[in-house]
Length: 586
Image 1 (cartoon, rainbow, N blue to C red):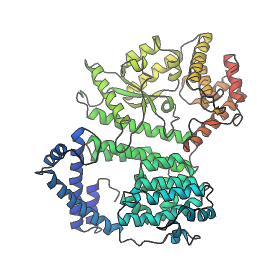
Image 2: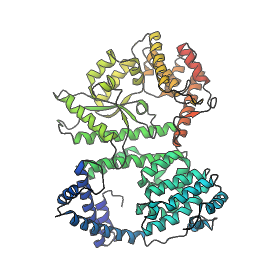
Image 3: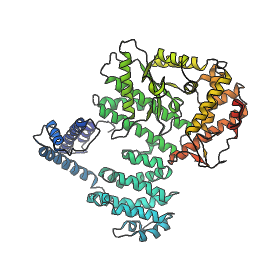
Image 4: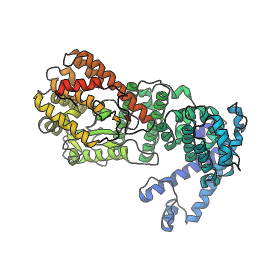
């Protein structure tokens, strides 16, 4: 039953005797019909949509494309398929025994009274307060708004019955967490998002353990709640704790993803959906482990970076396979990661700083690989019905936003050696090969090391880095009176600039500093090499880790920019190290 394609699963259900052959035949026919209809709808205006057209001329085009004489005939056949699917759905989900909420959540025998048809806000407040809700009037108002909403009132009867059974459970479950009001609000947002999807309501109604896990996840993180609201299919992941709390096995995930993409070869849209779902599944599993305290932040960032690398490899392969001017089996092309991905410090919502390199003597190579780069960027950043894979930033390429989208290896080398600004060399300190042709990756690393190990005039280097630091400060004004843990003086950016200065200033004497081993390891190495005092290096490492953990914790609860009261974080070490290296007090 672990096979992926829907039609194969249907036939396996028939072979197992779990569904009658006639039911499988009708579901299979409906699936093909609906898939064909979806494709034709999306061909109409080249849009990601599943909505039937409203314009009569578009309706006629769709009817003809589906081989029907007119739109009415198409709707008649569509309704026939929908009726058969709905009938089968109700036979599967409708026969389950509906257990009272009290059986799942003992200790509150009158929970169902919290969701009577005639209940008022005033009646809701006292029992919510008794359960521990600190903002009971607000929570009561949220519940009433849902009950009188057109979305709730227009639900099919069976869906409304299921929702009526879920609400009391949500109320009681939320009361078991530190902030019942926030937890309930997040659960209601998810419930509202899925209320018209009968399958999701049935899922939550039938699996009380999944409900408990859901409440635990959303209570711990508003970001996790928003992610589930956007991607409700991930609710399935709450069923099997054996998988959700296991570290990712990237080689196996890669093989599975390759197989799933092959199953829909030739259908780029479905392949892109597969990539979206793979990203969402793995991100949510990492999130679940993170919220359980099972992943140190550095390991989490490694995994999120590995996931991005994996998806970039498949996006590149998919883009090249559909290239109109593909002149060889494998593209002589590489994706280079900078920034958070380059330094393997990726977060859940980080964008990807990328550049594209090629090394191909074909006369049309520049044009071919420019189109490939555009295709890759489009697949990564375009919104579909499943969301988007990543936000991308391509401005770190030679000559920035005004430069060519892709560069030859030779042109990139010449630019870095002769024309790049100091800030571009700073960025190069945490850049690495991510996906594509490994030989180009090797050439890139060679260029990177040569550039970073160039001797530099220390006075000029200090001046350039201080100017760039001031420019960043001016671009992130802060009049809140709070300390910005990323951009404030003594914060994360200062520490990163310190590391970049050390690399650019001393890598010609100590080439090991040019290795992309991360800020913490480079600070420690600089201490061991005697460039900075060992004790201050250790204190700054500890501070950087604290700042990153604080930022991560705040972003899990959608706090941005990440600012804390002055003095909450001791930044003495970074101030001292800055003064020692740059000869100025901040």
